[in-house]
Amino acid sequence: MTNQKGGVGKTTTVANLGAALAGAGHSVCLVDLDPQANLTTHFGINARSLKRSMYDVLLEPAALTTAAVMVEPNLTVVPATIDLAAAEAELAGAVGREQILRDRLREADLPYELLLVDCPPSLGLLTLNALSAVEEVLIPLQPHFLALQGLGSLLETVELVARRINPPLRVAGVVFCMCESATKLANEVMADVRQFMAEARGRGKPWSEAVVFETAIRRNIKLAECPSYGTTILHYGPHSNGAMDYISLAKEFAAALGLKAPAGQAAPEVQETAEPTPAPPGQYLAQAPAAPENAAVQAPAAPGESAPPAQ
Ligand SMILES: Nc1ncnc2c1ncn2[C@@H]1O[C@H](COP(=O)(O)OP(=O)(O)OP(=O)(O)O)[C@@H](O)[C@H]1O
Ligand SMILES: [Mg+2]
Image (cartoon, rainbow, N blue to C red):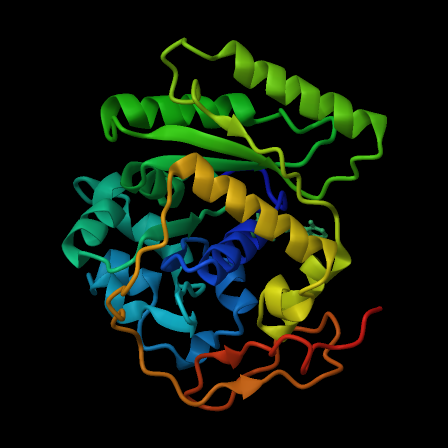
């Protein structure tokens, strides 16, 4: 999930699309490759209690599975901490520095059907590592007048990585996030993007087969609220527009990628965590409360149980 533009919905989409796919029976691993660690925080993972994170995976190197934290059935997060900010500088002189994540993934023989990587808002070394390691790129876009700004450099980067490092790399899809679809401007921008992608058909570009997903994620305040409860929209607001949109996107996404939920997945090896602690109600939009010592996971609120009242 990448777009060097900040705040377009990358992390929200990785978390909630991942949760919706996990809920549909797919075995999903979410990798936080952003030193901001927003995805890690989204799941209420307490960075201070972690023995290993993506920094160790890239720099030590530690096996990717030893840093994984299971947050829900079928859903695992490989967390990041602020340490990851140092990785770009520390790896700058390393031979093959763009391909370290790819090597870790190959070594790990991961027991997941799907891996979603949350990229930082830059086209730096961390994003290059993600592009070198994966097969498909998903681009979240916000349908306003600056939506296409930067898309050119992103596509150029994808093309370059595909040519030099990772030939199978392709843009699988574009997803519109934070949509106010009633506005004329949003509709015009969405039409422009669809036309741009349609014009690339058959031109042998990595984005020539890209799907512009029909499901546009509407602006929904519950999506912004759920990280402060350390959980996803499926638990926090199961009947909200946000939940409906991400469930619908997950269906489209699974169909577009030809995913079939396999039966009897092997249980992944995960970091030890203490008993999860429910987020206290009333932490509306607050920072995720610190988990007790050694607790790495905030409990997801059970549907309809500890979810706070609608605002
Ligand atoms: N559909 C939505 N409705 C309302 N708020 C949203 C929606 N999607 C995301 N947000 C909020 O918008 C902000 C930016 O979203 P998010 O963190 O997912 O973007 P990002 O692309 O990952 O940002 P960054 O580039 O900093 O990593 C967050 O506060 C998030 O909660
Ligand atoms: Mg983010």
